[in-house]
Image (cartoon, rainbow, N blue to C red):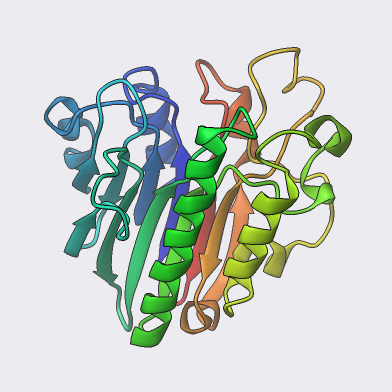
Length: 260
């Protein structure tokens, strides 16, 4: 089962690039972030025509997450538990069943948090506490699960080409990195680091200052696996070359292959 996460930075802007990548990469499931679309205006037919089931949790002009799946989607849930007043569309989950295993897939778009300190950073840290609580609940259920998406967290210095330039950014502040480590320390596996330990691998390059041409990137798109899912991990890769194509997102797809 090939499962990808991809922050597309606007479904309308990526109406050509995303289908092209789907036709080439052929993922079974894709967790999308920043669709920047209401549910009713999401171009479902682009993906349904390719055999994907579509579920969205949208928001006008901002945020928004979606699941595209060639497998049936069951127990679909929108919104991260823990704050009934949170109106930002940043979480969607569903169960998919492959040949041998059912897996719960959780797609997330974690808050950026800048400027920090401030209310946006407070919201980021509170959201991460809610994410921790949801992960603890899922672990107690003992079903394989994957937490995949744009975490807006640079876990370690090796995950940035120029870590010093991020020292005061919400993505790299000690509190953000500590919250990410607490999540991993529940017993989750960073799928990419389970396969590749070397520095120099990134999933985001800013549109500004020639970041892509200079490979001035950061790794902020992650797939964290429960112990049961980690046992099924075959591979994890970053489709870096997508960033160099026409009208790209500033993120690229990251995908795993599970024996499920």
